[in-house]
Image (cartoon, rainbow, N blue to C red; front, side):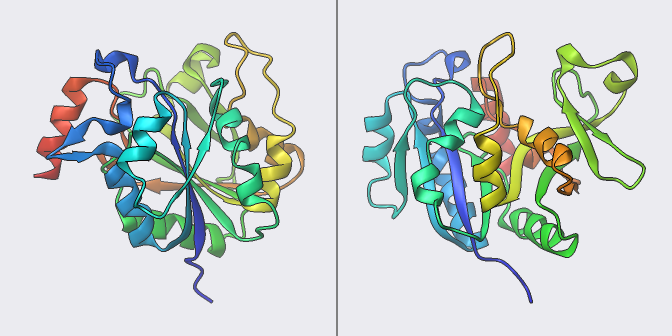
Length: 244
């Protein structure tokens, strides 16, 4: 049976400091439409039956802009990392046994077909967690995907922690996940903040899956531009050109 019903969880709490503007990052526009608007459209087109948006920085502005969009807003305050952000949606995900797709409010070029392909791959491989990955020409600064001989993910290693061999890997983590919701909720409770930033990282759920002998799989999308986040005004301009 084809599985395409899911809950979409969109992380949209960030400040967007590098945009050099007081406007929340997800409200910056491409062709007159906010970044978050593109992500909401993608989630709906892919078949999301519930959309939860995690807001933080200037939450009221984001809520007001999308108040008639039929999504649920959840506040993350203070902001203690991506794992902490997803954990804020616990009440909305409680008792839901289907799939959750984790998306980002600043990744406007992602196509609904890619989300659909991610879900189909997840179901076909009977995985507990499937990470959307891509191959980039220059992987510097990105989390690398370390796999075993069967192609399952062993871990996601960040640039600062990568060995010389791991730095040569060009397959990177996009941060977009398809995950069985009961596993997601139990894994979130086990994430720790023992790192330099003292934040709770969502990437830790990969290692938790591995530890608990749950299958963590990678689905590679060929078009690396569609999964790139917008962090600067230059990237905003480039995204506009890509959409043309």
